[in-house]
Amino acid sequence: MKRGRQSQAGLTLVEMMVALVIGMVLSIAVMMVLSTFEGRRRTLGSTSDLDQSGALAMFQLDRWIRSAGTGLGQGSGFAYGCTLYAAKSGHQILPATGPLPAPFASVDPGSSGVFRLAPVLILPGQTTPNISGKASDVLVVMSAGNDASQVPSVLSAPPSADHLATANLTEFSPGDVLLVADHHKSPGGGPADCMIAQASASLTSTGTGTTLPLGGSGSTYDGERIGSAAITSLTDDPVAFDLGAPTASGTGQPPVFQLIGVGDNDTLYGYDLLQVSGDGAQAQAEGVFEMHAVYGIDSTGSADNKIDQWVGTGASSGYSVAALSDGSMAAMTRLKNIRAVRVALVLRTSLPEKGAVTPQALTMFPDLSGLAVTRTLTSAEQHFRYRVVETTIPIRNNGF
Image (cartoon, rainbow, N blue to C red):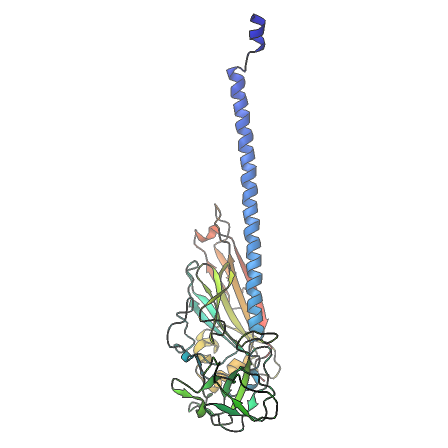
């Protein structure tokens, strides 16, 4: 019996304590490895998300800005800077009669609610996202649909309330959105008003007719009279620009009259001024903390069509919002000189790190003397990871 009891004896207290210490050391080591692995996984995942968000945001911006001025450039000498008038389903939408949806509620393109025809405008510091808390730029981009005519149709008589007189109807399709303008100058020397109208759904494009019916059953845009403006007042060499289909269908694309800016929750938004895609702002990309932009201009006009200067939107640059939106001949010339837009996006991860992982300052446009933008981060903001993405987007169809 004594020998059996000895063979069944357990661990001594010292042996048990040693085993516990070894187990604890191994557990701590495993936890440290797992913690390091999880941290690296989160970092790689968040930076990968930044790459995807940046690629998506830049793709959208490139698509809109590169096509800016499409279908409108032939009117750069008389229509750029004209006040846009549009009514949808009986309600005036341009000039805007009330605040635009967030994040564009405070947007002022030179005169509250008044938007003028321009391929691209930079509205500096006109959104304040809740996460960033700092002013972010807004872009205004305008172009006709990709299937629209590049040459405006000269009208043979002043517009009537229900039709336009044209040489032929071959370039128009039923329901197309139209921009009607003329060569008449306002008393200040700038362009006259521009009216958004719509070809009738009953239009038959045989090429033999000379009457383009407007509006009627099924039409969305009514251009007969909008506020104080009337289509019949366009009497001096009137023309009609075909902006394209009112909705995307087949190979046809609707016109782009778009506001682009950063809103709450690190999201890039777009808003359709003509409300083709709806009356609210549409989220375009996540993870966008701020946006800033500058103009690339051909200061010699259209002589060589080359960018020879980069300018900001300050009053001294000559390319401030006020200088581009006052409806003058000088503003028209400046709008034609814009050949590119350089855009910088600040991207941010959604989850904070335990410690500070980002330097205190982020710099955009560091190579452009006098135009560099520095974003100073708070100590709390330094716990997130950031990436500054810049691109230069040429404008291929601005002015002739």
